[in-house]
Length: 366
Ligand code: NAI
Ligand code: MG
Image (cartoon, rainbow, N blue to C red; front, side, top):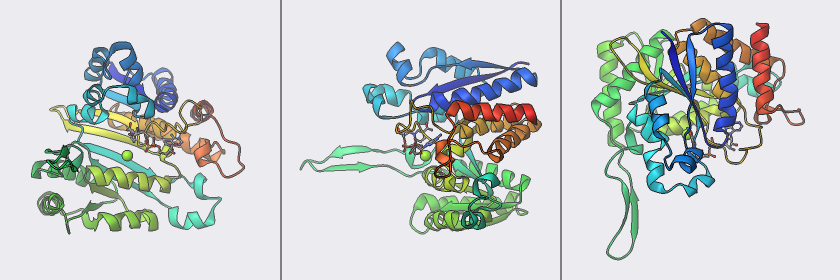
C-alpha cells in the first residue's frame, strides 16, 4: 500500500521552500522507510507557458491520484501574463473547492528559541500553542452573486456575497470541536454576529452543536475585531479557534507574528472523511508567493517543512515521525539557525537551502 504525495511548488518562493520540504520528506521515505512515492507536478505560470493551462492535465491527474498534496504558493505580479480566464480556471481557491477542502488547520506555536532573548516578547509569547480552524470552501470568497457592474450613469459597483449554509457551518464546527476535545478542551468561535447575518447563523449552529454533541468542550465566542486584539494581546489564552473563510484568512496572518514570522506557519486543508476515514488533504505554508523576496534564496522554509510534519501526522499515519520532525525544527532553532525573517538585527542569516540543511542535520542528530 504505497501512498502517493503530489509535490507542487507553484510560483514565487513556492518552489524554493517546497524544495526544502521535499528534501525533508525524502529523508523520511529513505531513512525511515516510509512507503511513500513523491510525484512532482507543475502549477502556475511555468505550466501556463508550457501548456497553456495553469493546471495541466498531468497535474490534475497527480492531484487526483494523490493521498496528499504538498503545495508551495501561487500568485505574484509576473502572473499578469496569464489571462484572467485561465487563472480563474487554475486558481488555488478553485482547486481547494474542487477537493472540498473545508477544514483549514493553522497551528500557531511559538518556539522558545525565538523569544528567549527578548524578555518583553517572552511575557506575551510563553506557552503559545493554538490552532485556527478556518472554513475554507465557502463564505464571501465564493458566495454568489458577485461581480463588478456599471450602472446606466457609468457609475461602478463591486460586490460579494457572504453566505453560509447551516450544514457548512456544522461540518467545520464539528471538526473544530473534535480537535478541541483531543487537545485542551477549549474552543473559541469567532464571528461578527452583531452585524452580519451569516455570522448570526454561524453562532446559532455552533451553540446548537455544542449542546447536542460537545457539552464537555468549553465554548466561548468573540467578535472578530476583539479576536484580532486578543491574538496580539495574549495569544496563549487560545486552544482551538474556529472561524469563517475571510476572518480565518486575516486572523491567521495576524497570529503568525506570535510565531515570529509568516514564514514559520504550516497548514493542512482537509476534506470530508470517506468510509475508511481518509480525507483529501493539501499541505502548504500559510504564506503566499512573496514576490518581494522571490528568486533570492532567502525565504524561510520552516512553514513548508512543518507542513510536512502535519502531513506525517494527519495523512501518512506517522505521529512519531511528525513529532521527530517538529523536534528537529526546534533543535535547529535552538542551535541558532535563522533565515533573514527571524534573525535578530546584526545576526548572520541562513539561505533557504542552508535552513533545510540545518533541519536535516538535526534529524540526523536526534
Ligand atoms: P505573502 O505571504 O506572499 O508575503 C507577505 C510578506 O511576508 C512579504 O513581505 C514576504 O516577503 C513575507 N514572507 C512570506 N513568506 C515568507 C517566508 N517563507 N520567508 C520570509 N518571508 C516571507 O503575501 P502577499 O505579499 O500579500 O501576497 C503575494 C502573492 O501571494 C499574492 O499574489 C497573493 O495573492 C499570493 N498569496 C498566495 C497564497 C497561497 O498560495 N496560499 C496565500 C497568500 C497570498
Ligand atoms: Mg492569507
